[in-house]
Length: 57
Image 1 (tube, rainbow, N blue to C red):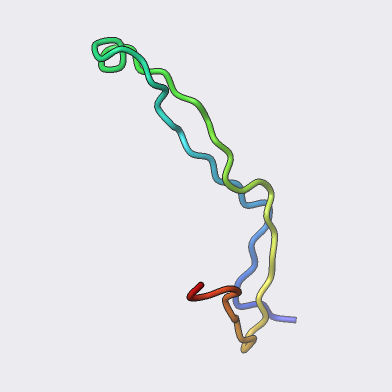
Image 2: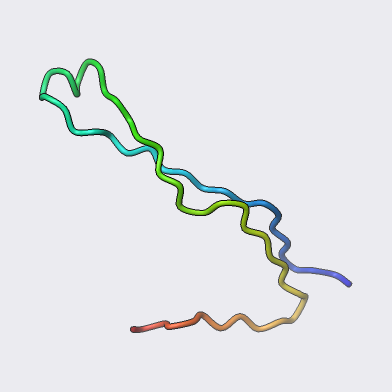
């Protein structure tokens, strides 16, 4: 079977700056890691239609 797209174990993390005092945040910024997606896997077959769910809501 041929797949047009195959994704295995996709993860995405964002680095968010923590709130601190003005000078401290400039010279010594601290960050918190926020997980958006963890270990997502999927396959899309050649010619398969993709329909976005809840589009336009």
